[in-house]
Amino acid sequence: MLLGREPGYLVDRLGPEGPLPALPEQLPSGLPSDLLRRRPDIRMAEAQLHSATAQIGVATAQLFPQFSLTGGLGWESGQATTLLRRSDRSWFLGPVASWPLFQGGAIVSNIRAQEALRDSSFISYRQAVLTALQDVENALVAFQEEKNHFRSLSEAVAADHKAVDLSLKLFHEGQTDFLTVITAQRTLYTDDAALTQSRENLGADLVALYKALGGGWDADQG
Image 1 (tube, one colour):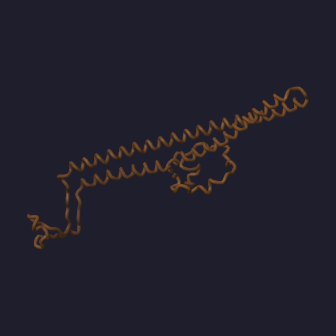
Image 2 (spheres, rainbow, N blue to C red):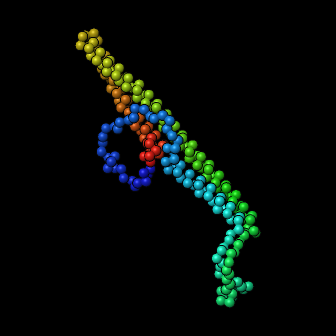
Image 3 (tube, rainbow, N blue to C red):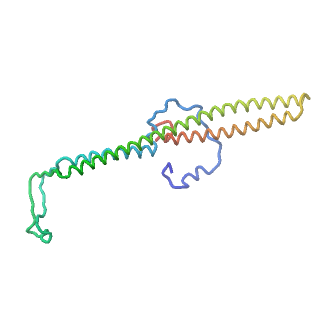
């Protein structure tokens, strides 16, 4: 949906199984806020705000007189039944001005209505920007927290490997029972599975950040 494609467009690409993709070591600091303007919701809200603002100018222009420099052709008649007779046709040449003096109240009311629509569009645009900032902040925090969790699990797995090696050495030397070895191995397998899950979570958090930004770090990528 985000790519504007029909369902099944990515089946061939996402169907085959493969290893987890490599993740960046760290996120770039100071991501520019202009990246958010690539998001479809912000682009739509911005376009609606531009349109609503332009409509104020259109409504205001109706207050001013309108000029015609080439004249015109029309009909004049006091009765509806004779309105389209050839003898009732009138034409004129030269500049003509029309000024809706008696419609000023309606025009002003229309201007105020367009200004209210502009204000509503601005509120929607502001809400879209705040939502985007919230999405990015949540994704950044989630990625950083999972990164710290992954680092802790990596250290735990490294320590578990040493514990398994030490317990095996002590067992072979007759200084401990095999239950100690099994316990150390169980701890290693548990922490290693958690490490794999954390690596998957990091990938999902990174995807969420890409989605929140409307793309990657480089604004030229679109």
